[in-house]
Length: 88
Image (cartoon, rainbow, N blue to C red):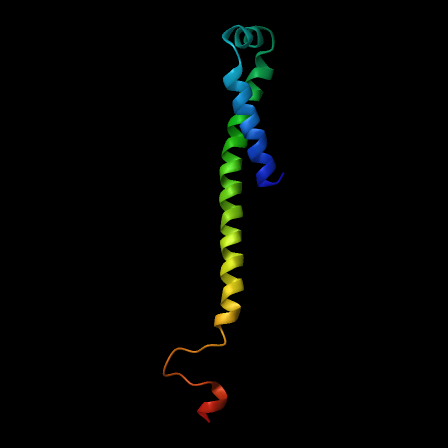
């Protein structure tokens, strides 16, 4: 999934986990322990994946902006250097 979807799933999982009462947690732990364990693992994994995905997304945006601005600055040379056609 995209970084935004992973972030949404992570936030929703954290909200669900934080809003779970002690009685509800005890019920799922006693009757559906594997489901509760998988839920906890998935919330943790999606939280980590959303941080990594968003950092990758931000890095790609920075790279795209940098390459966009470099296409305009490549026509200018530092002071004292001449173009290849002017050197001959």
